[in-house]
Length: 489
Image 1 (cartoon, rainbow, N blue to C red):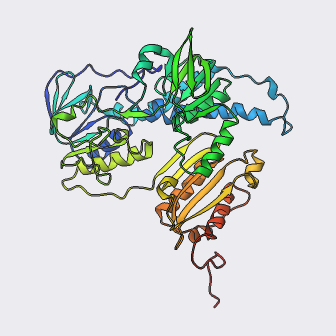
Image 2 (image 1 turned 90 degrees about the vertical axis):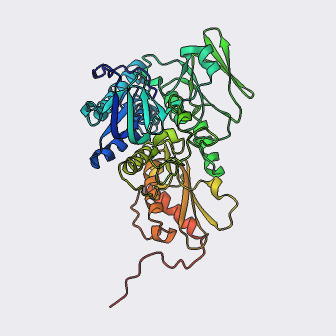
Image 3 (image 1 turned 30 degrees about the vertical axis):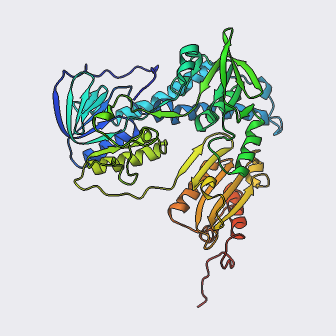
């Protein structure tokens, strides 16, 4: 796994192993979320194992992903809220200022707390089980570490994670002016202006946060979408609401060139000069060092080993497994954790078993939140057996109270019977609405089941209730009073 240099004092580990042969039941390549969960399963089964990692420990989520980004977003939201103070009768908002160096110091401080917790509960407790180095396949049962050590394993789990994508020409030409999520949080001084290229989850979250902290920000994506939204109604809402805050240049690839000590960005008819660029064009699986050619694994069109997502076992092998962001499937922490558990469990047992995967669930922590649950609109569009319900956030009482009454909820269900299929929403506190919908999907509930649930007043969940009432009008079947009947004695 590849990591950026962290500002904190790292624990001291023993020097690299003297080259030797090791024989274990399970070898796990990568000490991120998936690898650590696989390790837990090996321990539970009382199997001998080694955990191999050549980069900085502490997981992508804690070091450069979920956690530091949410700290930055929280600070940005708190500061942005000052714009409502005058309307609410709170005086003094004009005197508030943000110290960006102090903000970044705070981000790193909280980040380090999370990293230290991960280390304390995982690799800090390992001795000979931890091998620090990069592994390469010699054959399907043998790995060679870059110090010459060879590991012979009964089963192997590949959990090497991913790395931000940066066009090679940009990296070579513009150097440190090209930032990624791996390097942004190490900046003691943030640029006064920035172009964020890629309006997926990472780019949208960080772009909005940087704008709210007073940085001149431009959001650019060659696709006509934000955060991978495919529902046109939700997308139009998100572009309108978020586009009022900072410029969104969608539908055109970005071109970079020198402009003195700054960078010129062109995208379609748009142009701006900025101090730096945040490259948020996705992440690529870390497979380059593995020497997959030595095992003859079947690869898909992206160069990723083919595998069964229910067992995480590589196609054509009974002892090789893959898990986490390296699969390129659902690069999200809870998915990496589940995949690590599945791969680790099967690697530790003689006969692999298939596990039922959870519904797809993704949250973008922009404001309003953008959430996807279950099937995307792109997977349902054109089907005549699908019913749709929706609710704009504008009239929702709780949203109006919070001065966040902008957004849209869209629900998808089977037209016959009303079983929930998926949802797309751009809504305040969407992270909580999304959980309710994901749990309902997991239980295979219908719109009728959900409308029998209690809804308090005034809460954001009432927006979900209204969307369900709209959905039920498009579902075939007996509606009734949508409450449980309790027969009289």
